[in-house]
Length: 240
Image 1 (cartoon, rainbow, N blue to C red):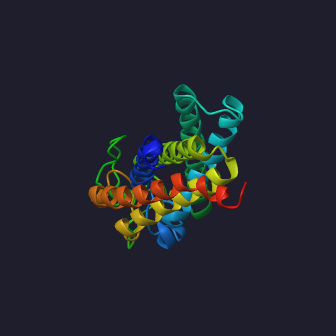
Image 2: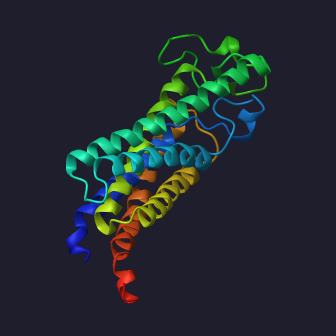
């Protein structure tokens, strides 16, 4: 069974790696950001990654049923399904960041700024004059917003790819969805240990830790892929 589904295992691994890398792009501020004392979104890494990823999975599942229905999706269908999931996750995370910035700017009354860089890598705007004393930044500046959009895209792409590979293996939307969520959470939790707290995006020094997360998530995704291709044999034990 493993030899027959090696392509799906490779796809699950690639999807897991996309998720792992995408997590490092998302600006996570944790509790300090919730109090406008750190840059990023005021919640945890796993919550943000799972939220955007699950939105992408919903979009991918709908597109899969629209394109393939009960039949097996072709390569071109997989490309469209993965793109749909990527866009869905990206929309979710960008809306979250946009509304968060509205709260920071108009509710708390602080301008988005980062203490990690003197100038925004994208706009070139000076950051230091706008960082509140005693904080490491606040809000979601342009570079964090762009980084978060990239992270959502990669997370949605990876989750959608995992879903398509599982549908190739068992053809059951329920089992594929549940297991895809599990694979997504595995590859979201491991990078959160790698990040150890908060991260602002691709300009953050912690982003250099990505290779370690790739290695860990490669091993985890390989194990998940092996288990996933064994699932179709389980109903046969009950005489189904």
